[in-house]
Amino acid sequence: MTYHPKSEFMARIMERGFLADCTDYQSLDEELSKGVVTAYIGYDATARSLHVGHLLNIMLLRWLQKTGHQPITLMGGGTTKVGDPSFRADERPLLGPEQIDANIAGMQAVFERYLDYGEGATGAKMLNNAEWLDGLNYLDFLRDIGRHFSVNRMLSFESVKSRLDREQSLSFLEFNYMILQAYDFLELNRRHGCLLQMGGSDQWGNIVNGVDLTRRVLDREIYGLTTPLLTTSDGRKMGKSQGGAVWLNADMLSPYEFWQFWRNTTDADTGRFLKLYTELPLEECERLGALGGAEINEAKIVLANEVTALLHGREAAATAEATAREVFEKGGVGGDLPTLTLSADEAAGGVSVVQLIVRAGLAGSGKEAKRLIADNGARLDDRPLTDAGLVIGTEQLASPIKLSAGKKRHALVQLG
Image (cartoon, rainbow, N blue to C red; front, side, top):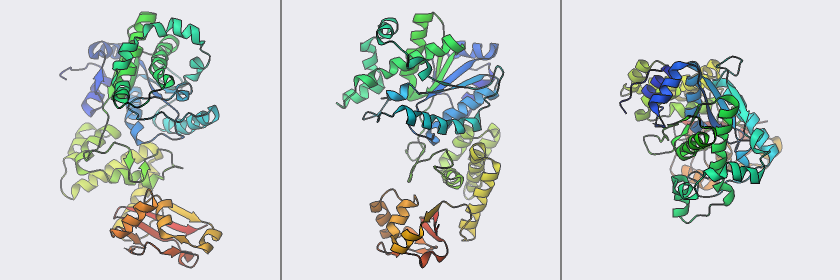
């Protein structure tokens, strides 16, 4: 891509590695240069917290606002009732309205850390597509919107094709999802003058559908832009760790564990992640990413501090770093480690160390915990843990104990 952008937003996201594809680079760039552009990203409310996999596009919305434009976070109160089939092997479990509303409330707290929802031309908006989807008349919708969609074309989209090629069922409910997402874009353009939809590159087909539908129904030119689907240098999907999803809500993943996720970034990913997930100047990101040997560890600490400060605040980042230094450099316990609290009744009956490892989030299952012990990867109070049959009771918990999985993952177990 040799296009040289005029607008600050396009220049910023291209140099930092956010841009995968765009429906029309030049026309969008001209719109961004002329004045405030309103853009949105949609989020289905499938869980009560966003996770690290969402963070790339949240940063994209943040850069959009910082460069003088208006972001919309569109909550999928309507589309969550259908479920996005994109690149999934099975149908998503359907959620009720109370759960969807609770999930949206949990996600909103994270968005407010990154975006300014104040008044004014660039003040962010949070909207819910249930506002226009819940009241749709099915026959009117088929006649007015459905007629613009070719089933042949819909079947050719990779998100649908991959499911059918594997002979996995795709329900009619899910098949409607791409029409509803296209309709969202049309409604946002009609109601809020929204010119741009952004999303991960797996959403390209859905975004193009919205651009096409709006051109057909309203005769207006709008745009789509996608970010790359990130994998780490060792091939893992971004946002996954050994313990599962890396949640952004502090009550689902402590600031220390979040900090530690970034501190454990591989050497090869450090420079790239500094550009994408922090606001440090580009030259500083490149300088830190180019460090070698033991020095790269300091770059990873900068990465962990900057990303954690954006989400949880500068104080939480400093506390997490202090805990990590105490645990790793001084062999201490650290006051900010993830903590599992047992009731007096539980402790009186005794709890197996395998169960404690799982409940503390250091292993995904009992089988995994036993393998960790067998492979000499588990430690109890910094001493090798070799007995998978060990039972921990009240006596051992007179003071908190520290469980470790490998050198970098730790948790405390204490009496409540």
